Image 1 (cartoon, rainbow over the protein chains, first blue to last red):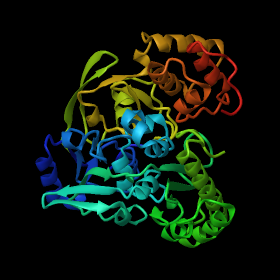
Image 2 (image 1 turned 135 degrees about the vertical axis):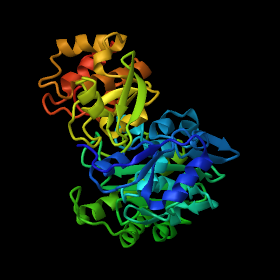
Image 3 (image 1 turned 90 degrees about the vertical axis):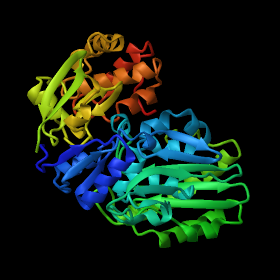
Image 4 (image 1 turned 180 degrees about the vertical axis):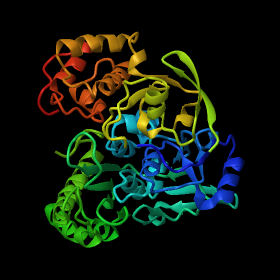
Length: 297
Length: 162
């Protein structure tokens, strides 16, 4: 399918030049990193930019790095970069677990995690994990920079709070200082590659505090504070789990669509919540399934 | 829009060609350069039929603007014949009669080549994960997975889940 919209293509060498283009063209400029979403949207004529700004030459957007305890994921880091990184494997295995569920190798080799949250589809697999880590999105424009909490980032389906002259520079996250463990469960129609019918991320801390976030179960990915409150302070047991499973239903609002019915999503959210918490708790005590192994069948 | 001249390495040959900013790499390879192994399947990144190897990694040529290829090295199945893994794979795919219509074959072969370059002794689940983005509608995957396992010197029976 050819792209019918005609646009200019620029590939700035430095940040100032890139920000200048966005400042000039605003909503008519679109950033291109991996392109796995943008090119589809161009083909379907859903976006009609005047200029496509290829940001892949901007060195300050590249790479994964750890500064103190804070992980910086550059806007150009792909899902394959995350999966192949020894740093991510050893220190942020939950992030890797979610990255492994995204599309397929050929897409992950190009698709960036920053692009994933910029596309902001409700089923964004990276979002629940970023949410349980209280990640921040670092954005830049000619006016300066700002940090946006991942909890404030999504404005609705395919919408973010990013201003038209801004671009994402990096995502930063600081894991809890204490030992912790997590689990990301993704429900999909088949094993190979699919968008999530629902996704649940859980993080368990040793003082019996819990963090839970979901995707594809409402208009935007989100934390589930009421579910967390029902769990906090208790060891995981049948009674607590059963209560949490009731409460999470009040925090999600899944729709029926081509991938699944609302009822199926509601039911499976309870199943996934229970398993994600149990897996995370088991991992905290050195047991449980290995990170990245398929945990749902 | 103004045409742009791009240069890249295609199967170890230097290419210089004029493209529109909106030209998609797959269309340029197929339509302008006579490279027909990348197929137009879903045209949105799901089926893997358009797979090429760009700078050592498999990518969807249907999701890349041709201008993005400037300065890169691209290998398609046409140029993969000298790769040691591709050669082994070719032999095993042939022996196992892994493909029927062949539409998915270029993508599967390049995905399997990338896998074996990175991981010469993959487990069955790693093989399945590596080709999860290459849809085959003929053979049910089993002879494909077995051929890749055998090319890697592994066991032949990898059927069943996991």
